[in-house]
Image 1 (cartoon, helix red, strand yellow):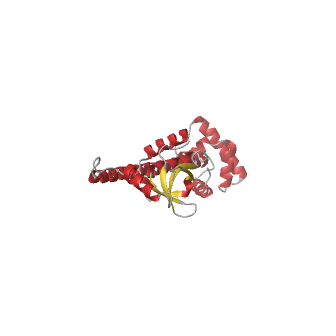
Image 2 (cartoon, helix red, strand yellow; image 1 turned 60 degrees about the vertical axis):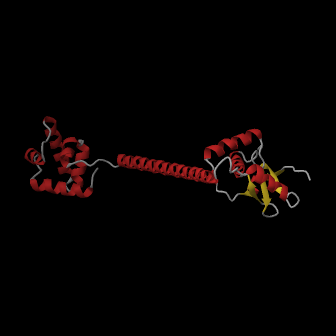
Image 3 (cartoon, one colour; image 1 turned 180 degrees about the vertical axis):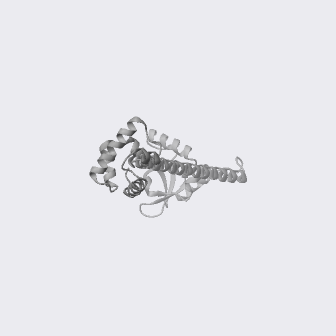
Length: 237
């Protein structure tokens, strides 16, 4: 019996060992090396789970590195070299797995190995959680900035409100006459009052609504109240 490798599609393989047992940095580095060499020097060992699906017996790290390589470049990373556990070679392959692929108790104490593996796994999980939290924070900040920008744009589209005193002091003759007409004054009366307003404010700006009533003929206190009341309902910008 001759032991030889077989090319198997990475997508047909599964593993019972969690991916989080290995760090993203190591898997990324191994995946890049697999793509550069277009293969792996340490073939993984598989057993069939169906006619065209397989499960890792040994070489889980190599499998996850190959899966990452396939994500990066589906064409180069599509296949991976494997040893298949078949009926005729099952005994000898499992003996080699036990001898070559399993950690030796004399080299690493089981407790230490388990503790280190657990610590590495927890560290990897914490790193992923932290990265996800940072992503969510960045997304939240981007959404907040976008909302602020939209609010600022809406704010610029809202015309500013003018108080009555400012309108008497700053509106053009035509605009003031129009707004006085809209406030219920007749066109001729509104035009006359607007002309008086322009003449007076050219000499000195009005300081209050009472100042306008005192200086402008045709605007009494009652008329001013009527104008202000109508303007407030019309919501002039």
